[in-house]
Image 1 (cartoon, rainbow, N blue to C red):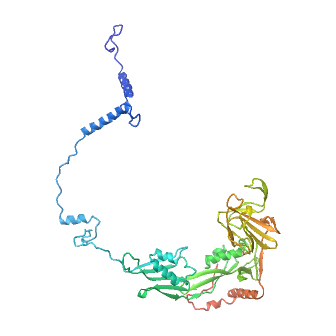
Image 2: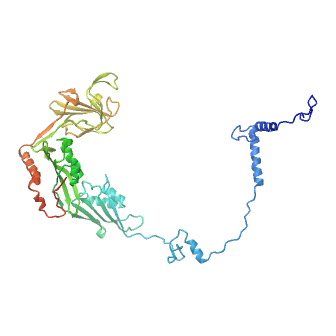
Image 3: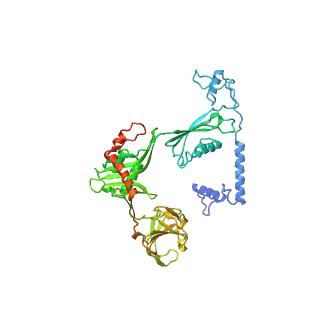
Length: 498
């Protein structure tokens, strides 16, 4: 009312500013809250007012919405037969007609579905023996029935007693089965059981039979000579030496000379077991002889020889020697040395009478040299413990094993597994505690080196020198013995190169 009344001075009131009513409208909107959140203050007056507003807006939208009446329109013309066949050609249907026009045509009523699809009378397939695989598993994967696999295993078990070489190819033919719920019978199986034997199994008259096919094999050792160039490994490989033979050769040479001292102009001589079948397949065996004629320094002649049930490398004089100590009786790192230390469990300083090697649980533990097991069992804080007597007042101890693989009184050789890493006894984690005893007292294991020397004599020395002369004679005057052989697939020439 104050907008139309005069003020006390008799003057007309001034018109309200344009922004006053907008401000009042904003204040009113803030107070009323036109769009409340229905997820909050459920059950309040404001919430019911918002719910009523929501229903009102929905009812208004439904009332004002247009109808969904069909829109009238003219129907398309009927397709002709040609047009209909063209439309059918766009569907995923068998190719029936229209080959002359190039169109994919749909099948007609002349095509009748088969009640049962026909089977192939035979299935020919190839399989392969995988790594760490067996013949039985490979045949089962190929679809051979369990009964046939058992029959085959019993028939050829004696021929593959050592297992089938990984990578061996299996040629398989499966025949027609009597019914769909039965596996296909094996009609034929052919594979290479060994380098010198092929096997072929067939089913004449419905019974499996095996035919053994012998293969001629030449066992003449492979001999490779050459001159060292930039690298002895590359030179030997370039002359045709197999990688396995070159690696074995270098392991022998490194025990006699420093590889860094081998220079250009030195001559290498390698003799390795080599079996070659008449079919062209080859097998490379162990290294037999390693020779190195040096321009500067002492030449090396090493021959592999077996005496007393032990195979070692002997020098030309008949002396075999293995120098040094096995640096770690387990594959691991040295985590604690010999001497005074604070015990991790007992909590006070005392003598650590050995060295510790941190290794993974279950890692194999090896004997550092030959000896006789004096004790194997539980031994106080050592847990599972093995002690080996080596002679000359020396003995070694191996503690905290998870499992012992040696027995008291057993004779063990250097590198033989005697147990496995564990954490038995006073131990905070998996490791090997290794001790060395001299006359019963513990000493620092790193202060002693084991040296084992063998000397051939008598008949062994005579046979050794004869074999060495045979290999060295190949290099000097008897190379023509191999050259005179007929160039059959089984002959093995002497290779040389730089």
